[in-house]
Image (cartoon, rainbow, N blue to C red; front, side, top):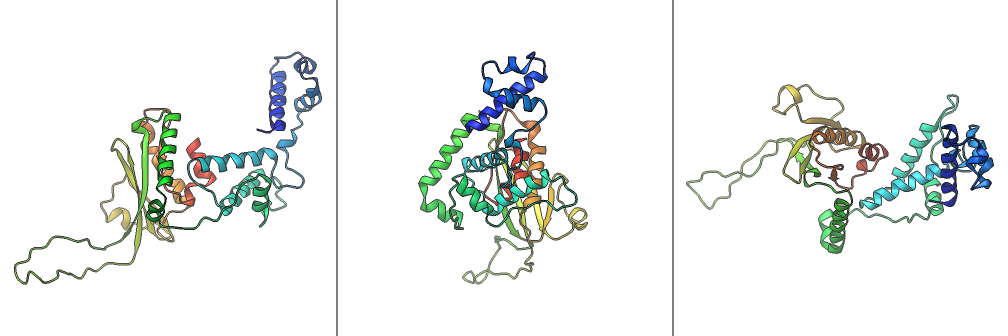
Length: 298
């Protein structure tokens, strides 16, 4: 934390103590730090600190930027790297929350703001090249070892119980596609066994979650579409505990990810043994959003 923010915290604490009646006067509260007299006086009178006011030449205040840095750091600590587009979305959320003038549209993040922010905050920008996960793991075993070391450190740091560790994964399926199966053959043993199977090209995604003790929570099934169809509920044997989501691609998105984490919390909160639950998931962007991470923290 910078010296300025540290001092502001001290000023805020003194101002609150005066409001609570812990000091008879501002002079008494600042006896050991007389240089803070004016600042404490202003805070007691209701004037906000400079860190809590929007900067005149920047989109965000110092406090807001510190919050963004904390978010980036938390994601990096768990092996995730937020993209420029995700950073801009985060900033726009802050600007919308701060928006108070109904006569004007809220400000938005400019095209060069993210680059300037990274330069100002000394955040390194690297190009992340998509690569199949198995290839990446095979090429860099040290990365895999470090990941497990980091996992072990977090389990120890937060005293996570064995029953509170979960892993989720997404599985894409082709609806109606048949599997290999054993058949009975008497004649022409050398002939190759093939059979025509009628199936559509429609896909779906199943999000599965399992606990380290073997407990499985009901999955999330994502169908391609714009509206829920009655036949998914009336003409199938899908249990009521399963959650169904829809998207244009049959893959997860920000909205579905937030719906799923609430589903996860519903089916795991009551069986929690320790103070924390640990959820291991992949690096999809929908799991790095402000809404998703904030829900997990809360």
